[in-house]
Image (cartoon, rainbow, N blue to C red; front, top):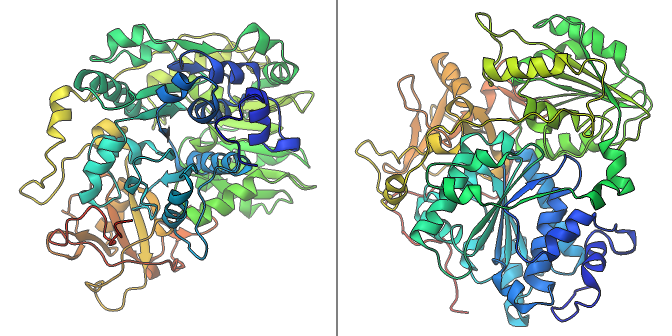
Length: 609
């Protein structure tokens, strides 16, 4: 059923139920209702993990934009909701929810008849009022949905911080350079930005605060752009950057009220018992850890193991496979191609069978992944990250009690702290030692003030410099990676092709998003040093340029590898040790764009209509 703008008498609760499934839908929590109907939108949401922050924000924006009975509220709500997340796996889950809610309300802009292009769906609706809302995903590779051709339409744009923040800085990763200014304008005007799980964003959090400051300093058009920051552990001082400090001190903080805490559904999650104890396995011994995991795994339930690096996760997964347990084994991390990752996540979310499921993961399950484990193992991590991991154990209080085991990591001379700092782990260790044999459920956790250090803060002169999009003398673009995320945590995108001959031909088709796998730049450097073949597109010369040991590697770079050289499997993702030929994904492919090609913002001709 499609709800019109005048059909507001049913109220927000009825709207929320309709969006979440009609007769099978559920009523909103009190805080979700307060968010939607409050006079002004708050800037900071501090809500415990698993309580429905995503539901509150997306459906709250939709209510305010389309259904609020007050016309001034609808007019003051930005037309574009920009939902920014730190990891790809969170983007896919958020996209699925948003599309499901819009479809239930009869508002989803879907494909037109006989078309696989979402843009055709939009165009077909222009004659009937154009009230549908499209959901666009920005995650690597230039997306087919040309949402920027419809700036007048309401839209939900969901993406990773790399893709969204780079576009907001006029240097969009993974897209045609000729469309940078379009996205720069559209993502800084008439937008409601939502920065979710900010404890994982690092420098991206700093940049988001500075961007909001610049929008105020430099001005925007139409409805003022606004930003909402969300996390279970967010502290207001985290947002006090050099140009946003004064504004940050006045931001409104939105959290659970006494009405929320009295709610039976929320209370069962807050008081869920999860008893903490140190693991008995030695650090750095995946075989010993695998044995302990199998001993403490409960048949018919899910056991979750969260490690801080892909390498250690892969090593543990390999040891568990060798032991051939009856439990179903899954490994999940950020280095999968989208179709393969989708299958992994679907497998991850399935109800465990009779023998149960053991999931080995990196930080990708810390936030937004709606799973619950009877048993949780986690490496030592910053306290804010540990709180997120605890939220994946006995999530809704479905077990009478559950167990959490933490694995210590050395700091100092033999430190294994990376990707974190020794100081962060030392602080977290002290807190954990005081919680041994106690519950680490939301209601039992100690309230620890957390600090945030701002590094590489983008300033006004840097922002103004982004208006010059010409290449430098070496043919490269200005490197903005230091403003997006930590340098040690920057990735390139790789894809595989079957190459006949010594190098790809000039007319080798462009890559598709489904082919791309996020890979650490350090891994690519190591492989090139070992002699593996790799190429990147040179837009100045209009050909595929081989990468050598001395070639500069930049974050966001897209690199072609030869399929027969391996380094990837669909079930385990990126694996530099794999020698098996990589199955090539066949998708619709376009010709690669040269710098001298037509500079139109769109490569497709459009009719006047």
